[in-house]
Amino acid sequence: MRYLHPEAKVEVLAGKAPDVELGLRIADNDDGVDESRKNAAAHADKCEWLREGLKNVRHLVLDEADRLVESGHFKELDKILELLYQSVERLQQLQTFIFSATLTLDPRAQRGEDGANKVDALMSRLKFRESRAVFTVDLTKEPKETQNDETEEQSVRRAKLPQTLEFKELVCSSDKDKEPMLAVWLLRRFRWGLLLRPEGGGYASRVAAEIQKNAAPRGGRIIIFVNAISYVQRLFSVLALLLESPSASKVLSRVHMSSGGNQGAPPGLSVDVLDLHSKMRQKDRLKRIERFRKLKDAVLVCTDIAARGLDVPDVSAVIHFQAPRGSEVFVHRSGRTARAGREGQSIAFVAPTDVTHWNKVYRAIGIVKEDIERVETLPEEITAAKEASRLAAELEKKVHQTFKQSNEDSWLKKAAREADLMLDEEDDTREVGKSKAPSRVLWGLFQEMQARLRRPPRPSGSVRLSKKQRLQVARRGR
Image (cartoon, rainbow, N blue to C red; front, side):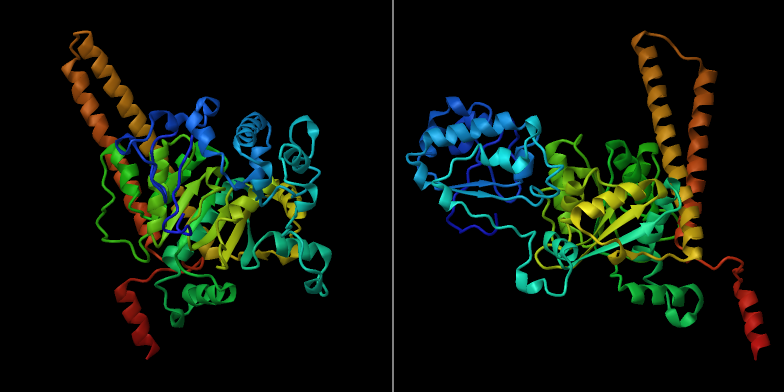
C-alpha cells in the first residue's frame, strides 16, 4: 500500500476476518463504519451500500488468479463477479487486469474443475468490453532479439524467474542427513565462518576459500520451507537451540531453564529463529511477519502459507528443506527472494529419494540441471555439524518429553485436589527428586551443545593442544 497516492482511500472487505493492521488500517465502529462491513464478503448480495459503491468501479484486478480457479473456489469467484457485473452502470467502463506467476505454467497440469484448462475456465467467467480489447502480456517469453544466443529452454527459464535469482543444490546422502547439512549451512553463515582468521591455515583458510569461491554473503534473512506444521514446530525448536537464538529461551522456559549459560554471549551474529504456519492465530502470524521484517539477521521456518503474498525486503535465501509439491509452489517459494531487482538464492536440499521429483520440477520450469551450482561442504564441517545437530535434537526431544510429563503430573495433582484426596508425602518427595533430575540432564546437554557450537570444526585426526603444549611446540620450533 506504500505505492498508493497519499489521498487514496482504501476499503477492505473480508469474510469474518479480525480487524488487523498490515500496511493499511481497517476502520472500526468508532469511526462510524457499519458492523455488517466486516462480513460483507459473506453476505455481499444483501449489502445495498456495497452495490451502490460498485456502480462507478473502473478497474477490476484479479491477483493470484491461479488460486481463484482452483477446485472449490469457482463458486466464490462467480458470486463476486456476478455482483460486480450487476452493479456497474456500464460494462464498457470496466477495465480488467489478471495477474499470476504460474497460471500458464505447464498447461497440461493446470486444470480446474471438469478438467478444463485454468486459463480458459477463468476467461469464460469474465466479461470484457470487446474481444479486440483483450491483450495478453506474457512475461514467460523473451523478446526475439534477446534469444539469438539462447536455446528455447534457457529463454523460458530466464523469463519465468528473476535473472538475479541463483539456483543451488545441497546434496544429502539420506533424509536423516538433511538436518546436519542444514546445520552446516546455517552455522557457516552465522557462526563458524565469521570470526575465523584465514592466515591461520587449516579449517579457517579452507572455509575462507570456499566462501570466496561461492561468493556467499554473511547473515541476512533466510526462509526455510517445510511441508508439515508438526515439522515446523520441531525444526523451529532445534534451530533456535542450534543457533543460540533469543527464541531458545522460549523453548527452554517450558522446563524452567534459562539459555544464558556460563559462556557469555554467542560469537558471530545474533540471529533470531521464528516459526509460521496456518494453525497460528492471524494476529500471531502478523506479529511473526512484522518481527521478521524488522530483524537484520533472522531465520523463518514455515509451511507454504508463506509462499504467496509475503513481501519482505532483502531476503537473502530461500531454502527448500522439503521438496515443494509441484512446480507452482517452487516458483512462489523462490519468489520470496530476489525481489525488485535484488539478488537472492534458491537452495534445494536433495536426498536420493527426492531426485526424481526435483527433476520433474526443474523440467516444468525450464531450469537446466547443469546450471544449478552445488553447495560444497568440508568433512570437518559435517562431523562438527552432525554432533551439534544431534545434541540440539536430543535436547529438544527431552525438553518436549519433560514438559509433557510435567503437564500430566500437574493434571494428576489437580484431579486429586478436586476429588478432595491427599497424596502420599513419600510420593510427593519422590516426585520432587524426579523433577530435579531431568533439569540436571538437560542442563548438561545444553552446556555440551553450547561448547560444540562455539568451537570451530577441526580436521579429523587433529588434536586440540592446551596452552602449555602450544608453548612447548613453539619453543621446539625455535
